[in-house]
Image (tube, rainbow, N blue to C red; front, side):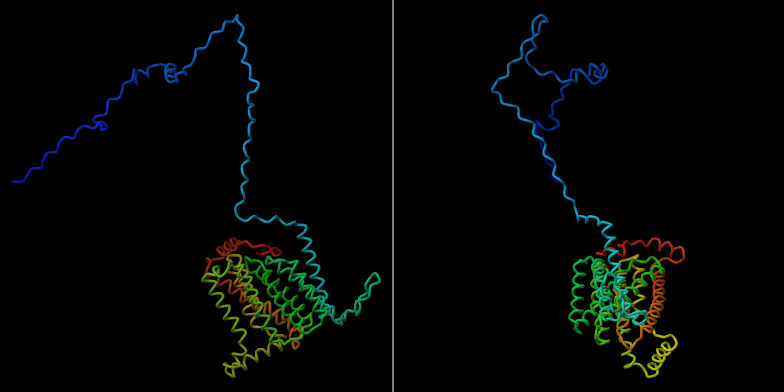
Length: 444
């Protein structure tokens, strides 16, 4: 027989338990009685009782009012009210915007820059291109000044120094540098080169002018929404590079053509990629698409530079003969042949890069390969075995072919990344509003 569970004793009632809680005291009036009372009675009942104190003494109207108590002579004066301290001024959070520049000052600097550039271009054109075509070889100066000999070698040299100074000013201002300091330094170096008249100094000055020209022609461009505006940016870059090419040869260098071409191209690539690294938000701004673009551009650059050597070493004799026959035919019938690095790399990179910059910042990395066009154009007249007419025609043919290649690249890019149809392309073009500073404003 199982044992039964023992009974639990009844616990004593605790004073704080619910069973021992005393009943609530009842008020004299119930809730129903209070509701039945008029509002005035309820308000009087709810009003607080007056504080206990001495009862006021009744004053008879026939008796005079008591005089006020005299104030003690040595009573402490009441201190003046202390004004509240002013709230602390809040400091602005984040970077403080620079004060706006004066439009008048910016306009005067732009006008001065254009004046010096036009003057330098005129001196270069007269000393290099118009030699002997003017009716007189001397320019009469007013005010009893000595006449200027237009056949002097100083004419193109002074023009080259003027163009180098204005180009350095523009490049420093565009990249956020100190244009006054670097332009004055360039002017002093140019004056020293002309005064000392050393071949090594002239060659070094020519390399500097060529590199500065090539980089400025890239950073002077602005984003292009469509192909028509991209063509405009290519024309601007070609003009800047061509004028810099006149300044490069105007300083009078004595150099080896092949070595000069490779050195200037390498320095321009390094300088342009250093600027683009800041404009394109570093390597993390590349993305997968940018990495592919840089790799493909580097491969095309290497192939265009080494195609002649590759043909002579690994090409069959029939292929080599066919290529050189085509080059000779173009020179005989068209006057010149386009340079592959200009037609296949430089100009297409400028067209596609400016078009991409209106949509994505990766376009700067594409524009960096535009030095494949700006450097050869700046080397326009370095080779004494090539005439001016042949050089101009070669650049023209290269630009035309490069524009066609760039148009194909834009169409392929829009077909792969955008929507199909003319209406969709037009809407995409209107939506391409990635902001960038104007052409004469600083990018950084």
